[in-house]
Image (cartoon, rainbow, N blue to C red; front, top):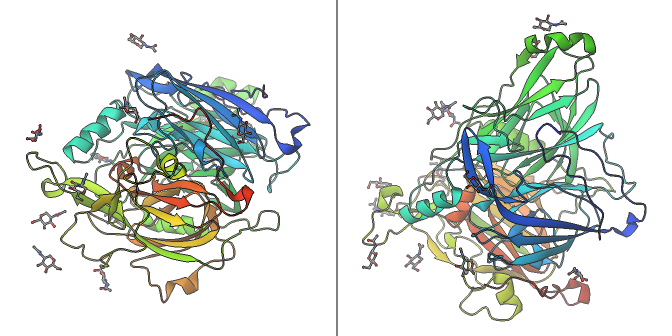
Length: 577
Ligand SMILES: *[C@@H]1O[C@H](CO)[C@@H](O)[C@H](O)[C@H]1NC(C)=O
Ligand SMILES: *[C@@H]1O[C@H](CO)[C@@H](O)[C@H](O)[C@H]1NC(C)=O
Ligand SMILES: *[C@@H]1O[C@H](CO)[C@@H](O)[C@H](O)[C@H]1NC(C)=O
Ligand SMILES: *[C@@H]1O[C@H](CO)[C@@H](O)[C@H](O)[C@H]1NC(C)=O
Ligand SMILES: *[C@@H]1O[C@H](CO)[C@@H](O)[C@H](O)[C@H]1NC(C)=O
Ligand SMILES: *[C@@H]1O[C@H](CO)[C@@H](O)[C@H](O)[C@H]1NC(C)=O
Ligand SMILES: *[C@@H]1O[C@H](CO)[C@@H](O)[C@H](O)[C@H]1NC(C)=O
Ligand SMILES: *[C@@H]1O[C@H](CO)[C@@H](O)[C@H](O)[C@H]1NC(C)=O
Ligand SMILES: *[C@@H]1O[C@H](CO)[C@@H](O)[C@H](O)[C@H]1NC(C)=O
Ligand SMILES: *[C@@H]1O[C@H](CO)[C@@H](O)[C@H](O)[C@H]1NC(C)=O
Ligand SMILES: *[C@@H]1O[C@H](CO)[C@@H](O)[C@H](O)[C@H]1NC(C)=O
Ligand SMILES: *[C@@H]1O[C@H](CO)[C@@H](O)[C@H](O)[C@H]1NC(C)=O
Ligand SMILES: [Cu+2]
């Protein structure tokens, strides 16, 4: 058996993260066992009690704590009516693609009554990541933190915090999200939006009937806290700020960054951000709101509400009598559409790029690709009335291909067994078939094509992709998530990418390395990665509504020649369709 990990964060109110004492024999990593029962639980928020799919009855789900180098064996048992699969978001899954989790990409779903053991080792990564359901919209309640501590004895590249506190943002829906997306895909219209944002599952006092469900962080004066922020929301990028406190960003997506100070951070779904919070040196006789609300650029409606948590200082004894009289401060967050803030914030993110934590950005490029990222339409069935633009259905695409997942196998299984005929074709377009002014007046034909096309890469190909937002149905920021790799963000800009001028401005010294990058609204981002991990790797917008509309594609990275460059065989319990 592995070593038990304390689940001290499961209950609101039990906020302080107790560091586990790890055994000394952890040099090469140890094996840690977790058990995830996918089960219904009644969850009460905003005066509604809802029957929801959860892990182990917890919302948010259990926290995984491990060290770099450890192996994880997570047994997932499905006790609900829905199919399920779990993705370990940001874990590189070197040669263990069978454990990545996106349904119909690397595995068939775990069906009712079945189980599957996710088996993988954490190699060369430390920091904050998270896990979530990767099928339909079940991740609305099925998610939790992954905390990867450095190897035993390896310090952080910043002073040791007094306490560590995971804060995971999510959305609370009074409606059943499975019904919401099913209905939207049937009607072709935009889906409903959430009723609240949450911080560790709690909406906080700015909603009706929610004051008791408030996340409180109790702190001591003069200490440094490491907040491990995670955005697990379905459809919204979030600004986050704590009144009267400055945050120092030290890590994103489990990569150390050059520390910088900011009042507010921006965090897209799929991203994680570690910040240091230095508390005031003396008891301030005040409490402080910690608020998050969206950054939204699209044309559609969105949940524009605000989740608030409370930063509460432990009062010295003689202050206790006046606790109910102390002042309360609120942070000022950027405007909902503050793209200037978003741009400035993302430009400040730089890899630490030291000899110990180098930025191994590819300097030579084997494949240069250009992908348009954006919305579009698809036809309505002839006898139906659709609620998308002009009676069509909403769609979304990469290079005008709206991606269809297989339904009777997974892409990885079909590749591995050599039976890809009729499942996928290896011809994902390297650039748009019909170039246009991507950020100018959109073409009058907004219809997308659809298909299951993969981009095939020989082992160790060094890839550059320019992802260009389009103005079709409105420019919009899209957080693109790449499975199986980290990507380096070597450049970004507004308008159309200029292949003659823009590459000269690339940062190949200390570009930020991460697993989810925002394609700027009305702009482009250039990324690079080395395809050194054989398997089938999903890439998709982490706004769940866009993924549902087809803003997704997959890479097929072939085996290398050497034995350690090959995908391992599938585990015996890999689910069948
Ligand atoms: C949830 O509540 C309903 C209605 O009160 C009850 O019938 C059901 O057994 C509860 N389910 C769980 C998993 O607690
Ligand atoms: C996990 O995967 C490793 C590497 O393939 C394998 O050696 C080991 O037996 C697996 N463990 C279990 C419990 O399946
Ligand atoms: C908090 O910030 C406000 C606005 O800047 C300021 O007026 C107030 O004095 C600050 N309070 C504390 C306790 O820092
Ligand atoms: C949020 O959206 C609602 C409904 O569209 C609108 O009435 C309200 O003014 C908006 N609130 C903010 C803060 O923008
Ligand atoms: C704390 O602040 C409140 C309101 O600002 C004030 O009424 C109270 O007297 C203060 N308490 C102390 C002990 O200073
Ligand atoms: C942001 O929204 C405000 C009001 O809602 C509007 O006046 C402003 O033009 C918008 N800014 C951008 C950059 O879209
Ligand atoms: C559309 O027509 C098909 C074939 O005639 C029929 O099976 C289907 O139920 C119809 N759909 C609607 C929404 O009326
Ligand atoms: C809808 O139709 C109007 C009028 O024909 C046109 O101006 C507009 O571009 C169309 N929108 C889409 C998304 O096709
Ligand atoms: C693309 O459209 C934008 C906005 O209308 C315009 O400023 C730009 O000149 C156009 N670019 C080209 C190459 O036509
Ligand atoms: C659609 O665009 C084409 C090419 O730009 C143009 O020739 C055609 O007139 C447009 N059709 C409409 C209905 O605007
Ligand atoms: C996919 O494309 C085909 C034509 O290739 C079309 O008939 C079908 O309606 C499209 N499906 C969707 C969901 O758009
Ligand atoms: C679960 O997945 C299997 C295999 O893809 C499929 O046949 C079945 O219809 C799915 N069941 C549900 C409830 O979605
Ligand atoms: Cu998107």
